[in-house]
Image (cartoon, rainbow, N blue to C red; front, side, top):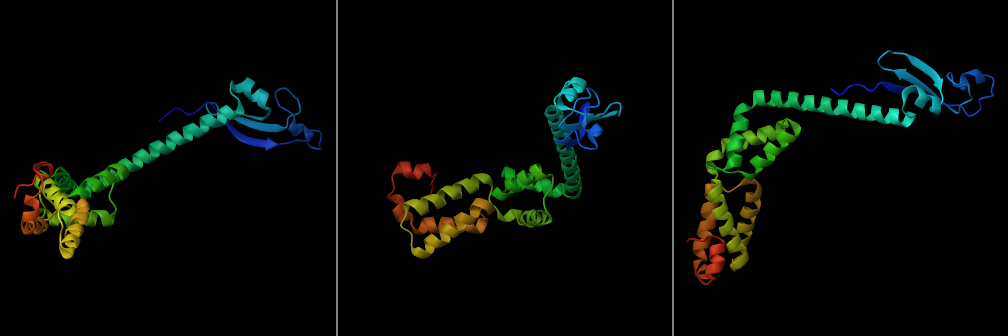
Length: 228
């Protein structure tokens, strides 16, 4: 933890009328001059408190202006808050990991996509890194998806079906029902990935419209890695 600043302004009063009946309290205790702003300065190392001081005498005693002392304390308190936040994040992370080690391992595999791929797995891991934990709903969602892992394609297959879906959507004159079906599958796949069944649907659509695909230029087909 960062060292505590030496001085702190522990009290500040505005006293514009130094000649009033309690005028003695409105004179600087060091130089004895009348002052408008009365500062109390505490030495955090010795515990000594001086009151009242004018702003000039605050500088003479501490080597800092009242504003500079206040700024130091704001920075110090912000540092403490950040450190406390970091400790809380660490506590939450350890607590979540202890209870969900298998869930984390499965999410990492789904984000990697070598066997099965889910785009949302990367989002859940990002939330875990940022907040140190997943909410109960996010954890339940992750576990539900993990239970269905075998239904999803690998990342390489995901890219293949994504490209085929884009080809059909942008270059082929599909029937209304087929276009709505394809659009619905593609939109969901950006978050949830493609299941084996959804991939079969898109491949069947490609077969249904293979005559149109055959008329496309080789450059267009190659850009989508089409192999029908």
